[in-house]
Length: 188
Image 1 (cartoon, rainbow, N blue to C red):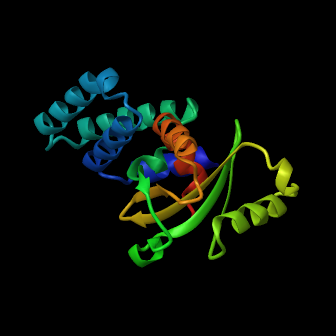
Image 2 (cartoon, one colour; image 1 turned 135 degrees about the vertical axis):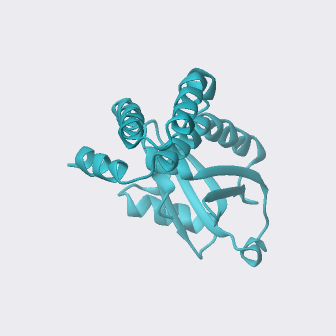
């Protein structure tokens, strides 16, 4: 059903919008070198044949098929318009700048998280309870963070209760698993 909805949505999106959205996504997953030639050809053909609706339809179909192949590889193209920015540390005055508390536990296949007003340690206890764990047995790497959405960018900062070395590890993980984190945290 999801594939049918994606195809319908892509059918009614302008060929330029579809191309641009796809190119933004490819840049976000750092594969622009791999597909640069394809985008140049599509762009040149759109310009060259801008008044030929049959050729534009064929180009749109090619792009939609390319997007479908990315989905089959496990990519979520809806995340293409969003980004994750890992910043430095913030203190308890972070709400003054629009940030909220976030505690996460990163496991090999999931990200457990909770947001709220309590301090980060209390949030960790609440996170454990939410997912049916005792505090001491909460799985994964625990991180105490501040977050805010600015436009379509999830900005994340370390909290005072987050040790520097653990935050560096989180930053490295976020650098290589940006889409995974965005997919899990897109509704916060």
